[in-house]
Image 1 (cartoon, rainbow, N blue to C red):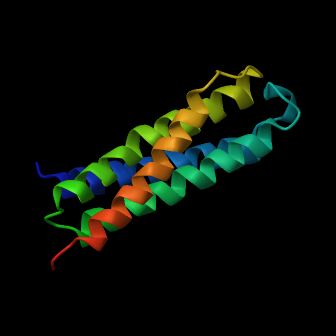
Image 2: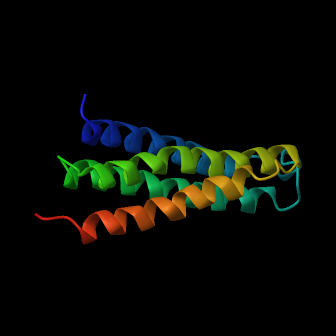
Length: 125
């Protein structure tokens, strides 16, 4: 299975999970969140997850044969999203912060976009 197909697959699954978490945020009683602002935290995570799901889908459709740099960038989005959004979801429901997990995931996401830009800068298509 090539990387573009994997991105399409994972992007679709990430989008489906974001819709599920959006429904949870909309319908779960406020007292089920670990923090008073838990619902808002989940909504922020859903938004970030959906944007990166769409980015993976776009990369999978648009870059059938990505360069190594582009492949690295796209491949960084999944763990970045999992770490960032996962930490936000866990915080929203438990009320506990998990150290540097969210910042690490966010840094991976930022870096993935920078690396993707570099990959496009040197793309010879």
